[in-house]
Length: 263
Image (cartoon, rainbow, N blue to C red; front, side):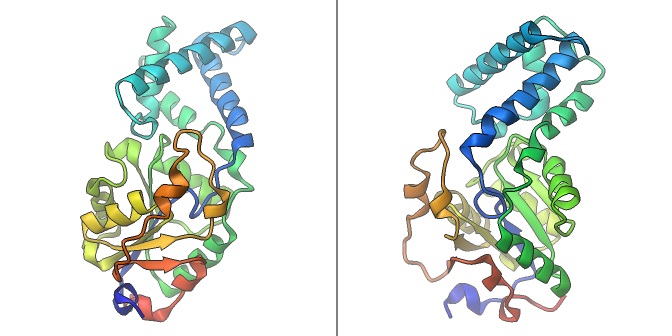
């Protein structure tokens, strides 16, 4: 048993992508279409047609390019900022309803991931619920945490938990601040929490820096796909050999009473 297994924790922080959910290239066009259709209706009315939708698509691409040039990652741009920037570019307004539209934009297309749940996560979360181990998801995402929490709970039937999203915190993994926010949600000190994710550079190094125990999940490495980070597989496979890291190929090994303090 390495040093990580020798400790007992009070709470679990889990990564979202390639830990709980799997991304897939074929979903992205449909997700983007859902979001563009929503903005076309909001900005141009219910009768918005193909022309208005194309204007929205171009405006979204331009706003994202502006953010890229400013070296601002997409998962730090919240839905409200994105919606308002698109509206300004198109000479439209969401004044007085920006928060409502931002929530709708955050939710748009999320249902496309219904079939992309990691089955190991379902089993683990149910077992941890019975053990009364509290769980928070810590994710780099441009969607609101509440969007993911409701989707995972209502549509996928997972136990209720909170999701801390980078676009709301204003910090993304491996920044220790997002991990501190997750610790605050759980109500425990960082050293009382185990964080498990698939990326060495984001999850292991970030958890360490925040004072959490790091776990590296390797079970979905074979499914990697991310046009924004083609080097993700290489970054994940980094390993300094430290015995503070819990390395696992199946999330269900976390259902181990030796890992968890009594509730």
